[in-house]
Image 1: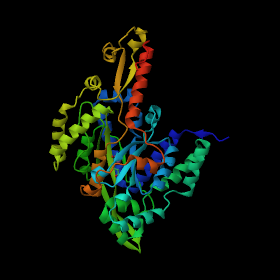
Image 2: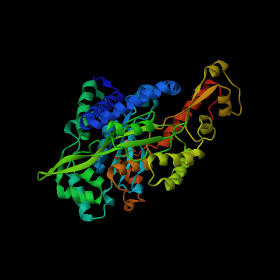
Image 3: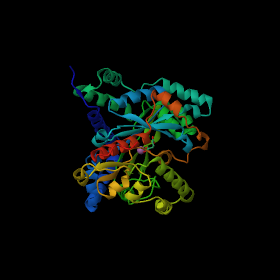
Image 4: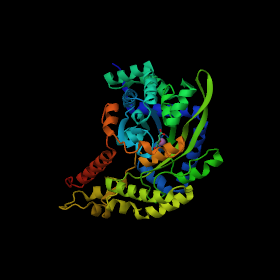
Amino acid sequence: MTTLISHHEIRDRFSKAMSAMYQAEVPQYETLLELVAEVNRETLERDTELAERLEAHDELNRLGVERHGAIRVGSAEELAMLRRLFAVMGMAPVGYYDLSEAGVPVHSTAFRPIDDEALARNPFRVFTSLLRLELIESPELRERAAGILAARDIFTTGARELIALNETQGGLSDEQAERFVEEALETFRWHRDATVDLDTYEALHAEHRLIADVVCFRGPHINHLTPRTLDIDEVQRRMPAAGMNPKEVIEGPPRRACPILLRQTSFKALEEPIRFAGDRQGTHTARFGEIEQRGVALTAKGRALYDRLLGESRRRTAGLSNEAHQRVLAEVFADFPDTEAELHRQGLAFFEYRTTEAGREAGAIAETEIEIERLIEQGLITARPITYEDFLPVSAAGIFQSNLGGDGSEAYAGHANREAFEEALGAPVTDELTLYAERERSSLDAALTSLGIPPVR
Ligand code: OOG
Ligand code: NI
């Protein structure tokens, strides 16, 4: 009988292989990794409280391996096969992101591990976008693009075989996993040769640069990888001296005592030489490097407040430098509570509960009306913030646009279509809020049970 290794082990190997490939392909990404490691080291030395918290929350170990990537595909078949490929690595589609609202003709999901242990081991995520050909206005161009896409296969025969084997066996052996990582990597590799001639490229490019990026190549090259930093403002500041050209502003919420959600920035996409069919030379600009800083996941109530404040600040930040942009954001977000206690009390963020030493010693607590706040005040349980593991549509749009040029086209707006996306994917996407709520709930149940209190419903 074949001994199977864990899906999480395969994901860990794959994410490391992917990072090695991207470092070799895009040397600036290697520089970015070094810069992030340096700033993380300095931050942990300076802020021992943060270091202790990350250690206690099982996040210090994963920090060095943590990263996400992004790809864009062109058809339902490609997306559905990717779902099966990511399943080999214990990654499932979480969240639906409509980017048409921001003028980018795609909708997306994030393939990522789901349970705590898997996230602690290696939270590798891939933001995956499906091109929406139906949003291309010209019928000729739409058909030409669809024809080109139909003629390509972005998966190797070996990858297809191993994906099928994973499904029948329920996993892969060590040796099969090694081969899988090698074969799967081929799908994400960069190709200097376009599959189309320069004229076709230019016609698609004129409709939207993203369409040219998806349609004109053999595969959905990984377009960036993103390590996690503990001080994004500092990395942004140091980028130019390290030879990188940062995007103008850091996306997401401002710097805060209690970081929320996700802050992101990138160095801008590089212009790279391409050989087009008919042996003509040209260039294509697609690949970049990104960094992110993660904070606590927000509840629906917290997210509504975030969206409202972000909307308010957007009216005042248009065209500002990053410094001025961050100042305005900080002013507007003064309305967002910035202590763990207040975030908890107002139900704005998700927390994980644990019984304390004192709680365990106290044994059974007789409470008819259980007030979690009181149990926390009495030191019987603790509540610690749950890290946000997902993405933000407005930030994603900002990242897309800074690397695609321009502000995107209004023409695509208002076309969210989750059903069509799920049909292409061949499965529903998991709602991210439900995952955080379940995690909070089960930790609370366990903590209360250990105090002899029946779980609240
Ligand atoms: C994806 C852009 C979004 C993020 O982290 O939100 C993104 C892309 O450019 O394909 O990377
Ligand atoms: Ni990204």
